[in-house]
Each structure stands twice: as C-alpha cells, then as structure tokens.
Image (cartoon, rainbow, N blue to C red; front, side, top):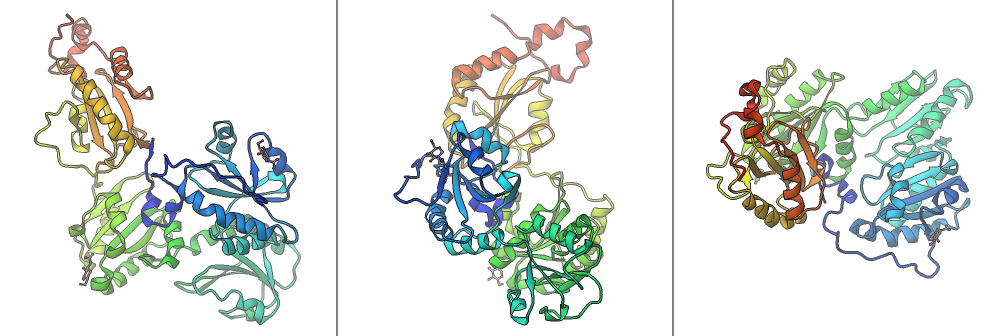
Length: 512
Ligand SMILES: *[C@@H]1O[C@H](CO)[C@@H](O)[C@H](O)[C@H]1NC(C)=O
Ligand SMILES: *[C@@H]1O[C@H](CO)[C@@H](O)[C@H](O)[C@H]1NC(C)=O
C-alpha cells in the first residue's frame, strides 16, 4: 500500500522517515567481515537489550532507501564508538521481517529508519534525535551516554553553549544538592534527547549574563527575548515551561535549515496552527510586523503562528490544495483537521480576520475538486462536494476507492475496478466510484484513509465497510454481492421505508 503522507512531510525535513519509492529495491544488508553493528532479531532482541545499560537500535526495512544511505555511516559510528569508554553498542533490527514485526510494533515504529536508545536493560526508551552521518552520530551518542547535564565551571565551559541557533537549558544553583537540583536532574534525564542541559553555580558565566540569587532554570534561545528564567522546580511545571518557551512567537519557514527544527515543533504542537504565506523577497515588511502583533495578542491562547516564504512552500501548497494566486494567504488548521482560509489577504486584514475566526464567524474551508460536468466512464468520479449526493444520499450500493494519482498500487487497481464497474453496468443499484484523496478533503470522522488505495463499501441502506480483500475482479464482485442491499423488493415490502433517504428514486430492479 502506498503510504499516505503526513503533514510533516511537506516541510522536507522529515522525508527521512518515509520511503515511498524504494519498495522493489530489495537488498539485504550483507554481513561484512568485522561488522561492528550487532544484528538482532526476535529471538535475541530482548535478551541482548536486557544485558546493556545503554544500547542503540536502528529499526530498518531492507527496501528503505534512507536506511541504505544510513548503513555505512552507522557502521562507521559503531566502529568508532566500540572503543569508547564505556563502549557504546549500536544494533540493527529488521522491522519488516514477518517474524520481527510484533516486537517492532511494541516500539511504535512509524517510519524507517527509526533509531531508539534503550537504557537500563531496555526499561527506558528514548528517541534518537541526532544527525545521520558518522561524526554527528558519534558526538550525539557520546553526549547521550554521559551524565544528562554537564557542569559549567568556567567561561570556556560556557563557550560550548555558543551555537547561536540552538536552545540550551541551564540550571543555576547555590549548591548541587537538594530538592530543586534533584528535580532538575530528573528533568534533564527525561528531555535529554531534545535539549542540551547544563548546570552551574555562577550565572555570570553564561553567555547571556545576569546573575541570580535563587535556584533558577534559565532557557537560552536564539529568538524573541533570548533568555527566560523560571523558578518553579516541579518537573511537570518545568517541562511545560520549556515546551512553551521554545516555540518562537513566529516560526519562520523558508529554505534555511536551521529553522527546520522549529518548524517540526510547530507541527507537533497541539495548538491550532496559523500559517501566513507571503513572498519574502517582495512583501515581508508590513505583513511580518502586523502578524507579530497578532501573535503577541494570542500568546498562550492555543494558537501557534508560522510565517512561510512562498518561494519555499510549494510542498505545503500542494499538500493543502492551495494555489499561488491565492497568496498572500492565511490558513488555520485546528487539531481536529478543520481548515480556515483567507486568500489574498492584506496586512491590515490579519487582526480582524483572526478575531472573526476566534469568534467562530469563519466557515471551515473544505477542499474539493470541482464536480465534473461529464462523468460517464464506468468508474464514477466523486469529489468532496459530490460525496453526499453520489455516495450517502444516492440509495445505491457504492464501492468507493480513495486514491492518489502518483500511487502505483492505485494504477494497478484501476483496470480491475473498470472491469468490476462494467460488470455492474446494467445494475442501477451498484456504483463503482473513486475519489482523488490528494485533491479532496476526506471526512475523517467517516473514513480512515491511511494509505492508497483505500476501499470502502457503503450499502444502499447505509452499512459502511472497509474492503480489505484481495484486489481481484472476482473477489471485489463477490464482496459487493454479499454485502449489497437488495433495495427494490426488500424495501417495497416494508411500508415505513417510503421515508428512508436510501430509497429515494429507487428504480425497480429485475432480478432475472
Ligand atoms: C540474533 O540472531 C540472528 C539470527 O539467528 C543472528 O544473525 C544474530 O547474530 C543474533 N544476534 C546476537 C546479538 O546474538
Ligand atoms: C517573489 O517576488 C520576487 C520579486 O518580486 C519575484 O521575482 C518572484 O517570482 C516571486 N516569487 C513567487 C513564488 O511568486
């Protein structure tokens, strides 16, 4: 099945996760002489992991192109790290192998490759969020195997916090003991994959100075107010503070890769997401300042703000079904998938439109292709705007395919669906239909479309089933015959059925 792309893919950062095209490119990882990466499978995974305080596992699939690209780097890192003290063990696990799948599913593998760090014999599982070339892997893992927070004793130590584009969390204490310090260390252990933690007795050593006279959690960040202090040392409170303080007021989306971690964070947030797309080289000025004012106004009120450069946003436009002539545009996507759109927005319309939105005055934007004027092929074309009429209210038994134009399995299925449709050509109660799910919003409360093709069958009286059988003409026809409602005779026998929407304009059907 072709994998439905998720929101995050369009920003180009997480393309690593999903390899769509490499399906047939099967080649096993040959076990080379002196290979340092451990091979694990279902028979020895648990046992091996339980013997290690710290072990890194790559979950891969043999067909995945990004896994193949990673393999030599991973091997090189394993070889360097094998002489580290203590040694750091890197392992790999074929999550695609049938016998291994059950174990892999316990680790919630969403894409390949996924790398996890397992600590304490596997009791603690942590996502690997480091680089994917050998030196980067080595540096990241050395840091991960060490203490969760590093002490800053000197100006030189503090100079390590010098990367102007990164976020650092520093605990400032009078002594390295006591409840606050312990909580800080617990937090550092918990979030070590995401942020750099350090602790110090002297805040004046820190790059963005200012001393303090009580235990302080100081967050250094490359945007907005540059550093923020926090004094509540409850682990949950600190975590929430960091979560919020590390989201910039405006997340910038352009081709600069140093912004990409923030773009990822933006999409991971449960907030409603406001996205303003303008042409940075033409019209940024007033748009940016007005948008920023709005972002300040709504801070902490459940909306996050992204400012995207039109030049870098083709993927996003395709994903949301937008066109460049609608720019400058402001789009809001809520956590339940609703969208709201203001196309061709002017700078001074930003604030009033957002107010209308928060007042519930803006209607959701539902993407649909136009209803086709001619629709006389055997397989009927359904678009979001015709879904009600053609599928839900037609009184027919409908087999509906959700497809993507680029999906190979859909192309293979197309002639089969044609044949199925032709075999029902003289049967007015049955319709075979298709919907391009990349160009139409699919009602998520009714259909669960995780990949393409996805097939649903709705019987004339409204029984909705997903079709998971073989994609052959015979099996599909069988399924339809088994699950269809014989509306004509069955319904006319029931007096109350005249009001049923499923049987309006129901043509009498000749069973012979
Ligand atoms: C786990 O089992 C597989 C298959 O038998 C083997 O190739 C691999 O070397 C084993 N790994 C370990 C660490 O024992
Ligand atoms: C953005 O504006 C520049 C300068 O006016 C123009 O050359 C470019 O084509 C525009 N880009 C888009 C995607 O409209």
